[in-house]
Length: 142
Image (tube, rainbow, N blue to C red):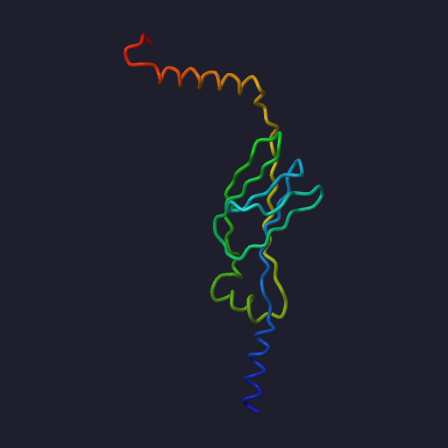
């Protein structure tokens, strides 16, 4: 009988809860490509958050890009809630018979790109002048 109780205890621990960790990203305007730690993870949708699951807490790099808008880069500090710190994490990850969700919501507003072709042309012109000056013979007048 004692052996059955031990087996039942370990079996019930195996059926315990877990924690879902999610980053929910919304962008204005929608349709932005989303990169997390350098990997493309999806595209934001209108009226719906892009949900990205993750396993570990810490600092993560988030980049959103969309044609015609300036890229937005930020660092997310994902801190563990109190119930995910030792010794409480044993209860939430193993013992509890239900799933907990730790969700971080991020709202990103992308700014329209303001640099026109004339700014790009001016930059290229100055770069060509600097290159010509750097490649000029040393005895040439400057």
